Image: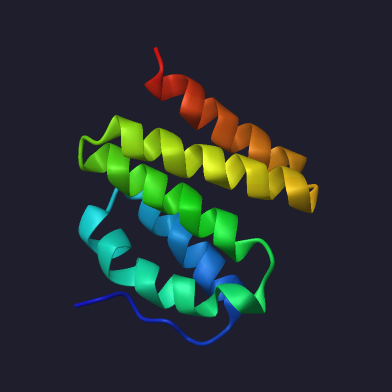
Length: 98
C-alpha cells in the first residue's frame, strides 16, 4: 500500500525525507510518482525528488544512477540558492565515490 498524500506540497517534501530516512525502497518507489506530480507546487520539490531517486538507486545497488540523480539535484538546488540542500546532496555524492 503506497504512503498517503494529504495534498499539501510541504507534506510531500516531508514524506520524501521520511522515506529516505527509513531507507524504505518500496515506499519511495510507490510515492515518487505522487511526488513528481506535485513538484510544480513547490520549487524545491523537483531536486528533492531527484535526491530521493538517488537514494532509491543506492538502495537498489545502482551507484552510477544514484550519482546522476544527485548531480541533477545539486544543480537544481544551486540554481534555487538552496545551498544547504546542495551541500547535503554533495555529501551523499561524495559518499558513493569513496
